[in-house]
Image 1 (cartoon, rainbow, N blue to C red):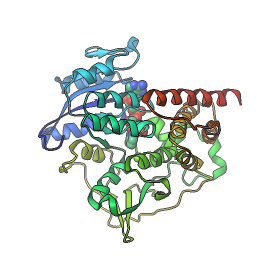
Image 2: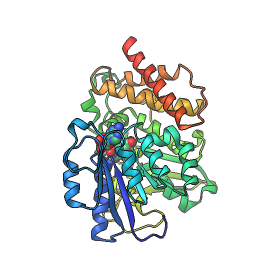
Image 3: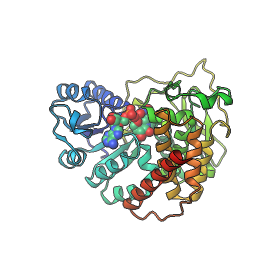
Image 4: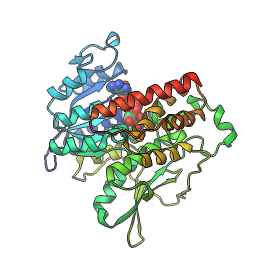
Length: 383
Ligand code: NAD
Ligand code: MG
């Protein structure tokens, strides 16, 4: 996609946090570079967004992927084939995948099969199937550009510094809303408490994952896969100010940091224009007078980070199981059926079942995902 003047964009999950911020980046381009154009979008549950987008972007085609009984009017497609039709019948250069959870993997596969590059916010796609997605992208001459802020930061740093001299990657974490809460109070925290994130305004699943740091566990796997780095060379540091998103250490002992305002529109902007670097209208980080802190996370507070390292050691299937079990456990927690601290117990017990399984195809991935979900649900229901 490099060098092309105008990029046609499809936004998946347009009603969500990433989706709405992507639309903002496109709106901004319309008053500045005119380089981005909304070609299509998918909506799953937000019924107001389609009407608003139809008025604002009349040329864009919409797919409703949610329940057909509540489908809004004026969408080009609806029902089980809606996503696949949107992606095969809309001409576009890049797809922003802002779908939440494992459901995003099918969308990533469809986008690449239709020869469109991916700006990938859906980290579950990377955790579950990056090796196969990358093969598919290469076959179809597409690229996968990370949108997750830490990985977008690493992506930029690695290109600028040069991969061959980098010895260590660091991703930062805000520490979530319970960073300083006395440990004995963790088990009484509700899902609404977990969703009061100190820095980012995000969807419920990722907000709960930020409180447990399963989000950082997924990001550790994501970084290892994207940048082909053994986990022993990837550090996680708690940085409550969320200004530094990523750092790389080079052989000569220097540490390079990527610093920007905590605003997801910045990594989305960077991914949509990549490999070009274009002026952005979302402000910049002014660190004068700011004290930036960095701390090692503690295992007693964030066990899911250590469990992710265990999954990485075990292999690809274990990482798929980690993601699946966590998604199931978070679902139960969000409904008030298990305690905050039990999320980690469910994931750990699921991983203990043993996941030394081959991953040769996307079918294998979906099978392992289904199996792990069932085991995790059984652990909650029967123990
Ligand atoms: P969100 O809950 O705000 O939005 C998710 C969107 O996906 C919604 O529009 C929802 O309707 C849609 N969706 C849910 N299930 C679907 C399905 N089965 N099929 C099609 N669409 C479906 O979540 P979000 O915070 O925007 O996160 C989206 C993804 O981006 C996640 O993978 C998350 O980890 C990642 N991410 C988000 C942020 C952020 O700041 N929000 C940052 C980094 C990464
Ligand atoms: Mg992130």
